[in-house]
Length: 122
Image (cartoon, rainbow, N blue to C red; front, side, top):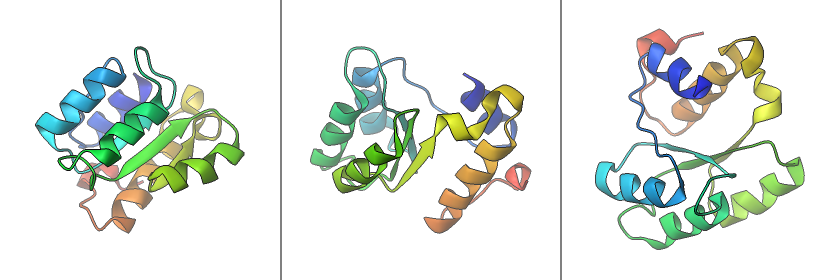
């Protein structure tokens, strides 16, 4: 919820899903520019969601950023599975503010050549 509020506050259009199944449905319906995918989700694990997104012709090309507290070792495996970037929740310091999150997301968005909202310049 902290991520959602921080991103929306600076101008990103944010759509949330409560679980893995809903995430797939929303991605198919809304076709977002970028998906921030938590790896620990109810109903379906993040890795399974990622696999389904990448196998689906409607969602396969949507860039996915893995958000997890799992070890850095998992980052390499997730990249092989199709994520474009990896955000380690423990390094974002969301309990002390959203600056690191906003900088990380803006850098990813720029790298993907997508538009960064004016309010997101940190």
